[in-house]
Length: 250
Image (cartoon, rainbow, N blue to C red):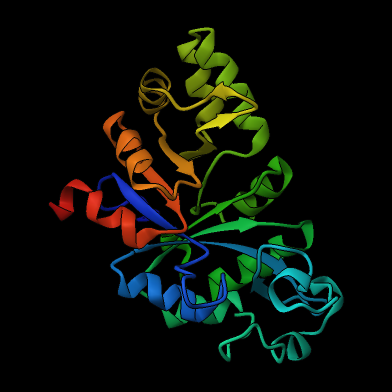
């Protein structure tokens, strides 16, 4: 059984680590988040040409390293030599899981090619009970869950859309069935001007059996407002600002 959603919420998920003085999705950023008190780390996974799962949000390195390099076209030995700044390189997922064995990891599968390597890394690190796998793609989410049935997953875009419709129509039984495969709904507060996260919707989703995590919230006033309406998780670039707001920190 997964222990990802322990202890009880609310919880803070450090989005790409704590990248104030470190490159995002680098070991320096994740260690900084843990040093700030974070126990939940959010990251993204792509795969190299030779099937190594690596921590990176974008498919290429132009934004983070200023180099026109596509991860899926690179061998791991070459990718791992690219400097992201501060002496940091792109981490391998397996190595990151092993390096921070007490952290729980929220892992976004960014490409079809990343699914199998990510699952393999989780298995090799013996970390299936402390990760949550997610993707905008329902195909990727289902594939990951089929390969690793005990792993926790959160709602894909398709599940989110169906869940929102059922919630707004008051179809509570249908909402529970839609959300049955997942343990969390991870959503922005609003989309195209439409409020997704309200006190009413949060309560409905929680009654349907899932946690509600909201991304990406970086202002303390908004963090507190969302905690006050009962959200279970804040996905944030500023875990250092969010952690002191949790009831457990008071």
